[in-house]
Image (cartoon, rainbow, N blue to C red; front, side, top):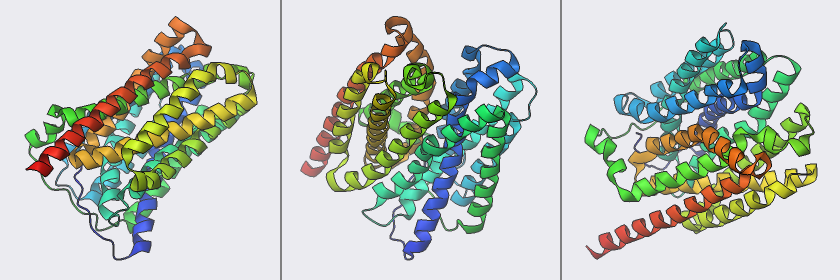
Length: 398
């Protein structure tokens, strides 16, 4: 896990450049993770397997990331942040390039494991580094910028990769992601310097967040929102098939709408959280997200209706997740890596959760089940706020 030591940057321009470089790495990993969803049919045909089997590429990646993030943070606590960030990006890029060349599905799974390990090293370190180098009072915006690189991948990387895969082959999409990773790695190794090192923690201290109900409820809220909204994203093409009419290019357009709105929601939420606090932003965003999922079975019957609802979905979902990431930083900076694990456990659970909802409700009404999960997330989120408020009152009394 990455601890955060905040200080005022003497050179705002240099700080901004470093934050954008950290965001570029998050963009690479986001693209590598999200693009597979749009390429599953092509990959399944290439290896002569079912789409269900091919979806293991997403599940395995998410599970390895979820387990690896806290463990890697534990064993690399004394590694300089620049070294850890560069190494994570190098390993992740290697895994992506390897996945484009392997001759069998089993070897592609192994390549995805390598890529996930690189992401598990990079993302928590980059998120902690963003808060560490930010100016006081601007930590929310700094974290939003770096995580915005991850969400921007849904706006540009995933739809672009899907479009390239439909024109050429899925191998070409992965080669593109690998090339971007090499460029980002060169830039980071050339410019990124002087990232504050985290304070060393014992093993007991590192696992302490999991024993805290205050932190556990925040992590559970993140997991539920991610599992819910990614259930709709994993089966994006099937849920939106009435609007796309089976067109890969229209599907790429809708993926772009989702990603662009997610990026806007993520970045805007950073400023709003700094001004209004994470609770208010979270509650408003979750309420809007629930409404979007309830009406989606009806609005997605037309292209215009699908575009509007998907835009609201992306905007509100990622605003809620940003508010929760800032809450994690406020409650326990040492829990950053655990929050990353919560995100990817949620992604890993999204496919079976979505499959269950499709079986129970039908593919076009999947989002009604998703809405129920998000309602549960809202309840847990309020419990987490109440627990933190009670903790702060006790500290004030003392």
